[in-house]
Length: 524
Image (cartoon, rainbow, N blue to C red; front, side, top):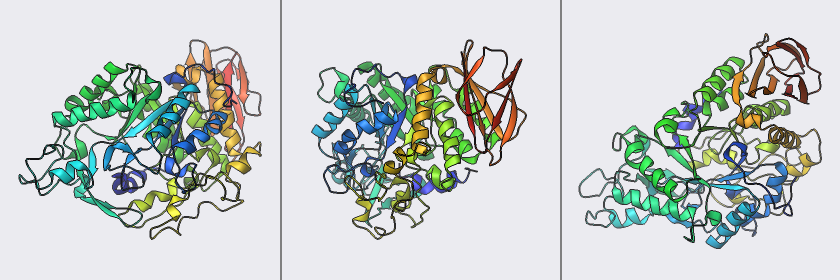
């Protein structure tokens, strides 16, 4: 959500094979999911207008299944003047640059035909001045939409500001639009949201959910929206009633909350907010910091405090954060450590498009505009030349920054074309880690335990279920190391990734790791 433009700098300062013919696949459970998070405008352009679109994603489902992911999460699809589609002008319309309802239904049905899941990002707490609720309600207390948005005066001349007193946002293309807060206290708004969400769950209304979403990501979800005390108990008055009614329609629906406070574990959302999953932000920060103490503390707290039946989404980057590759300056060895932790530590892993090839992005600061986050949303690099069919260079068409973002350089090793051919590439490492995860269900189903060791540069942990153990050790430093892991009693281990043979002495396991090395072992 684009409020992140205002707060992400402060928060981020804490950061120290299957193909389309093989369609008879089992249904993916929540524990088995690997999510691919797509900023769809930048993924693949199917019609030559430089905007990534719904048909573009459908054309690349073979690629996603070859990578090994099993679910897709989009940023919002609804109509908005802003390129990221947050701050809507019409929640019921698909942005025409993405395609039509027919295109959307074709994509969702094809995902389901392949045994994959689809999640839609929703943020209905804000609207722009282009929305009918604003246009009909402004200066009109008698409007049928009079209580759909919040006003600061009885004459309804002043729609209230959003967080930090912001009344609008300048787009990357220099288009400015006013923004206001939706009145989530209104029973009419609750009913509208129910009908809206229900529609996307079952567009044709026949009770068969094959054409609908498998769940929603609730962007910027809060109990007290923006801390303004205008709507102080939304878990009780809005979110739980809404989610409860939606679950009555489809009990299998998954609800993912993006907690507004990125430094929290999101436990209040899981315990009181009615959601199934939150994002493991603190674990993300710890992985990016390459700090054993941070990793230990935040992995323990994240996984051990999560209520039974609830889940944490483990990620390294998303549409609101700098690219992981930018943070580690493109160091492939560090990128592989991050990938291993992303996929092997447990929870529900999420991979942001382009993360698997190490897309870098860069830093940008153009003031109070949504152009600041364009470097983290650039076109997916399909080709080593950075040119070719499907390249989604929409941001190069217009606006004062259209010549600023040139993607990573051609022939720099960061493209799908280059990396698929290189057995040692980051892309192939992601494929390997995904295959290891799928071959070892204990990673997703087992309990988590940090394993102590005698080296302050080695982070080690275990997922276990009964005598079934899966152990991972990573070297967080640029020098070879040896570490003795306190494993506890268990069966013999086989190495599923790494070059050394583990030496075990009773309850202690000795591993030797190269610089930024990873080893993974499983019982047999």
